[in-house]
Image (cartoon, rainbow, N blue to C red):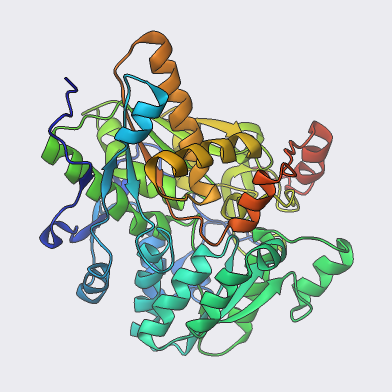
Amino acid sequence: MSKYENVPYKIYLSEDEIPKEWYNIRADMKNKPAPLIHPGTLQPLKFEDMQPIFCDELIRQELNNEDALIPIPEEVRNFYKMYRPSPLVHATFLEKALDTPAHIFYKFEGNNTSGSHKLNSAIAQAYYAKKQGLKGVTTETGAGQWGTALSMACAYFGLDLKVYMVKVSYEQKPFRREVMRTYGAEVTPSPSMDTNIGRKINEEFPGTTGSLGCAISEAVEVATSTPGYRYELGSVLNQVLLHQSIIGLETKTACDKYGIKPDIIIGCAGGGSNLGGLISPFMGEKLRGEADYRIIAVEPASCPSFTRGKYVYDFCDTGKVCPMAKMYTLGHDFIPSANHAGGLRYHGMSSILSQLYHDGYMEARAVEQTSVFEAAELFARVEGTLPAPESSHAIRAAIDEALKCKETGEEKTIIFGLTGTGYFDLTAYESFNNGTMTDYIPTDEDLAKGFASIPELNI
């Protein structure tokens, strides 16, 4: 008899169990993430340095290393009730298909119109923009999930939104683009010819498919040159991981409620929002010495920031208009291949996660695209949900860990994050099903080109 025999297939918390506070993991980190620095002075950014780019309250959250709990505004929490709490699912069908003694659970964040976890931070960021009296905001989007989420949030609060969407995703995912437009957003493929930075990138890299670094540069340029606008980012920043902690907090509550004790926690890693959100309360226990977990970040082999990147200060964007962050990076000029996991095609990684990885609190692995879609297809067939390509990186690692348990006979408990659905990613599934999908792993020479763009600093 399974030790989780009495655990429901889907664990739904009550509305009253939606967290009332976000968890700020930095408060429990002995080694705090390195501060953002001004590229001119190389000094840590102050509040006033960031005001032209971000909303005031988001800056306060970005700089807050002390407070472990940050109250969730009532308006944001009320919006959360539209789709939260999200279910923690016991993947019994997947366990049976793998014939493994492992117990597999996943936190499903795809049960909203944006199709992903991104709405958790989008509604918070839009709320603070509205509260500040802004007319609108700008942003970038890779796979389109963040742009979709922010378009929903801006529509809810009556804000204008300008989205710069990575060109390859703009072309591969037209339906996600149309959802954004349905919610009132203006969507432009990046790099565009509408901005100084876009024109420069197109000139330097003719025919480029774009990158998140390019799109960020364009969005920041427009925000800082348009009165009444600010820029909002869907991953990487401390403030975003703070908002996404609601994923992990709900997961921890469900685990405690049903006696689920995870051994391994897995999340896909692009900029870090999903992974950081899922692991936050568990990592907090680990940092405080209260419990121990294996925490695994999974990234594409085509954009291996953790596994092959350098831990240094680098620009967060290709156009070098943003502050510099100390992170695992492939270099701000690195433009990954046009793989189908658009939300994971970022050259760097969250400073919080970079510090935790550097200090040995978590591990990382890179997986190839075709193996990711093999895992996605199996999951879809046995669990009934078509997963996003990004989420499928975590599925790949979860399956691999479960198969190891099959070999050893160990009865480990695995939790992974299913960040969203793949119904707007059918071009990718078509490529896989037709046998035309390929794997690209950058050579050392390819990576050297990106590394060459990293500034040499004595910090």
